[in-house]
Image (cartoon, rainbow, N blue to C red; front, side, top):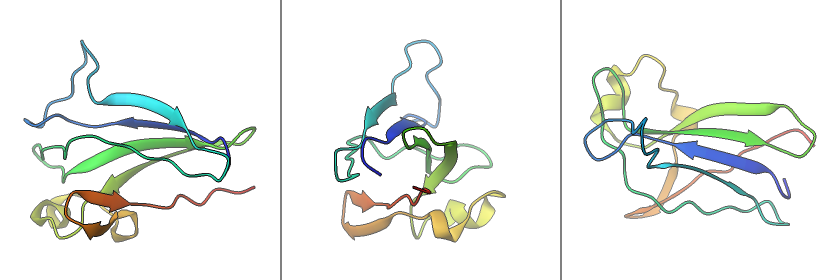
Length: 105
């Protein structure tokens, strides 16, 4: 969706969330073709959770979609009670993941 607002946040290299300096948190708008690009680290696991990135997506004038993206082939996925395979990123090559959000127009 053109100009959709995307908000991202995730844990750091130690599996901690920075609730003081707010590192690894931010937002951006998709371009006119609905494309976005996030460049960040791979977050660490923390007790009970697989590696994941939190995301909120809001198309202009629409409801907010709040979800999480997961990394494929991670041992923690099986242990995470809210993991969903359909939310795994597609990995084309090491260090690059992709995910297409589908929101109502």
